[in-house]
Structure formats: structure tokens, C-alpha cells
Image (cartoon, rainbow, N blue to C red; front, side, top):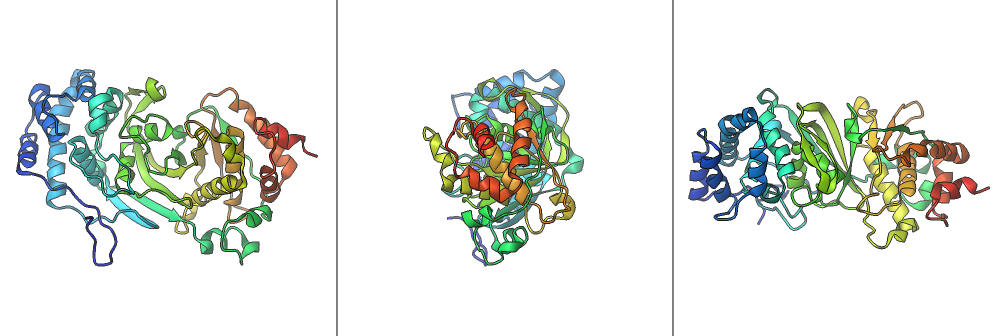
Length: 433
């Protein structure tokens, strides 16, 4: 049973080490090499004969200096921090409902060290099913390299800095009263409210880069409703890559309950530790120094359509996606003005494995973003990354024409509900008289 405090809030349940596990961790406190440490790491992960092939390949491909740093400095620190965390576990609430939970970078390093040793436990069935690095260390050397680089390069001088997880739920007092002043009596984000929204459509900026390259921005994570998706298993698309090159985001996987249709999560102050090339099966690690300090990750899950992609054009699906994006782009009521005005860096949200129509999803984000200004004088920016997709590079022209044609959020929303040509959404909207 998950531990509860006096207020009946669910608290994080820490693993209890066996005497053998504690003994092995204590052995790793002293400097070792590949051959002396590997049996210990495997034993902690519950393996006797099978090898952690992914980890072994990743270590063998490190240069000599990096290998020395890992075995003589990082690995003993990982064992030390693991023991310290379990000897004096901090009281941490699970992020089940609206609220925040904070971690120092050292605490996150400690949790990820325990995940490396395969010692964490899944908290509850409503949390992501994987919480350790076991599968990555067993079968995915390129992902394993990213984590090794994190363990090696994490800056001890930054260990006291805070990373915040904030779970945001729909709140009529905020999301309607502060953004839809003419609809004070409405308590839900329904079709009538969106149809009557007279806010002006706002133009996007289109850039031919990856969205995570934006500095001092809110980076949209094309999320699974289980935060992190398959990051700790086979997954290696946008969300999993984002969490792999920024491993501190994994703390959200460990602490976040599955998202409802009106919830989002923001991870504040994460660091990018490495670079990459490729996507999916072609993904591979590229070394670079930690950068992009103080990034904010907006965990925004889209609907999955599978073989039923036509369902996304139904009014209930369009409404769900607009509401989800709007709640995300609106941040929280407690956000400072300077944080609220940070650029939103986004792209083809929900248009890959989730089978979203890219033209429809872009217009949904346009509507949600345009409505997420509290005042006319607020200069918010939406930066849309084309991911070097030549087709998307022509979107700006059509989006600008649609904005000029429909002017307001409400008019464009009403037309989205009436789309008949699902293969040519832009063309259809521009052809209407």
C-alpha cells in the first residue's frame, strides 16, 4: 500500500533494500573498473547470467577519459546518493491532482541512480508501468549513452537548484473568467463558448529547427497520457527523445499519475545534457556539454486515433484537443508575468504515431494559443518548428491566409466543426465563401 500522510495525500513509496542490495551498493562506493563493477550492477538489476548488453556497449564506446570519469567518480557517487536517499528519504507527494512538488537536482540524480540500479518500484496502476532503466541498459545502447553522459556531467555546483513539477487542472475561475470575460456565467469550455470567442487569431512564427533548440521557452512535449510514454522501454520518438536528452524529466514519470482530458503538467528548470541524431530506430547519442538551462517542458497529451483517424474530425474530438492545448498554453494562475510571456515552442503535436492530421492539429493549436492571451496588449509568441519538413515550410502562407480570412477564434472554430474535406483542410477552409 502506498504511504499516506495525515492529510490522506498519497506519498511516494520508497523501496526497502535487502541486506544483499545494501552490501552491493556499499561495494560500489569504492572506485572500480568495468569488469569488477559489472557483476554488481547486474546483481542489483536482478540478473545473474544475462548481461546488460546495452550498458556494456555504451560503456565500451565511451572514450578513455569518459570511462575513467564514470567508474572512478560517477558510479561511486551514484551508489552514495542512492544510499543517502533511502537512509533519509524526503517526504514527497505523488502528483495526483492540481499542485506542485519540488526536487533538488541532487534528489533527481539520486532517484535516477536508483533507477539505474533497478531498485525503484511502480507506485500504482495509474502511474507509468516502467520506473527503472533496466530495459535501456539491457537492450538500448544509444539511450544508455545519454544517461551515462548525464551521470558523468551533472554539475555538483548546481545540485541545490530546484526543479518543479506542476500539475494544472481546468479551473473555471481561471480559464474562463480570466480568458473569456464575456462568458462569466459559463463553467465549462464547451462549443458555445468557443463559437462566441471574439479574440483575434494570432500569427505563428515558423522556424526550420527542432523545437527543443529554442532558448528560454516553454517546450511542448508531444506526450502520452502516461507521462514519458515509452521512454523507459522501446519508445524513441519526440517525447521519449526529449526525456532522454533531458533525463531530469524522468522525475515526472516517477511521480505523475495518468493525465485526464483536462490536465497538463509543466516541468520547470530542466537541463539538456546531450545532443542526438535520428529518430526512432535511427536515434543515436551525440555528445555535447549540458546546455539550454532553465527550460520549461509542457506535457501535453493528444488523442490517439490508431486506424480510426477520421474520428479526430468529430466535434467532441476537436473540442477535447482545443481544450487540452488551451489549458496548457494558459499555464497556471500562479505563473509570473515573465513566465507567462515566454515563447511556446511547438510543432506537429500528435501527428506522428498518434495519427493526427497535421493541418487540423496546427489550426487547433492556433485557436488555443490565440485564446490564451489575458489582455490585448500581451505579446505572446508561438514558434512552430517544421523539423526540416519541406511541406510544413509552406504552412505559414496558408495559415496567414486563414487568419486574414476568419479573423477571430470563434469564426475559425465554427468552420473546423464543418470540415468536409479531411485531406485538404487548409484548401477547404480557404475555398469557402
